[in-house]
Length: 214
Image 1 (cartoon, rainbow, N blue to C red):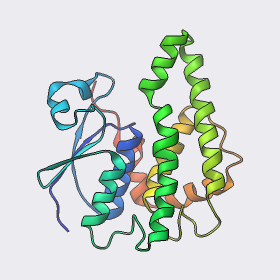
Image 2: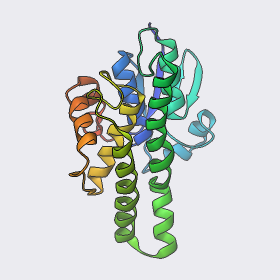
Image 3: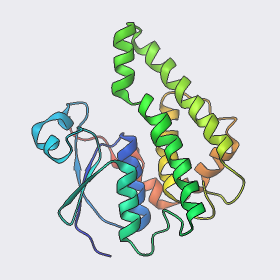
């Protein structure tokens, strides 16, 4: 299905990274428009007209503006008939949403850089506080995610990647950036290995995308 897609993206945004993976898995091309968070471009009037929350990503599909990464991924799943980002059965859909939400709604919000910066500013702890905060909450969240995973299939749910894998891999990128010890997470590392074998995941990696111009 050919679609006219414009994608407002930041290379290290976890939410943007999720959608990049989904687009790649579905074979959908997009016109990428980098929005530099470091220069606060996401808070400029032109971008806020697209997304009043000032968050990334925003996606325009056939003239419709979509925000919130999981809602975007579910929309893509619905418009691409051959997509299996969500399973066909209700139990499978629940399972994939359960795993996706465990990252996107539990780990991600408290580890958003704006939250961590505010905590650091309030406590005066500087970089040491940021690192300790990230390691604590990412590590705790991934430990719970490890327990949620089962042994069925190489991916988070079954034999092909789903929305849950689109959520896990960006969170693992953040974990590695902040020095979280992943050695005990054998099931998570199994899933990561399966995902990294796929071009769709490799091409979505921040290092493949690259930082926007300053």
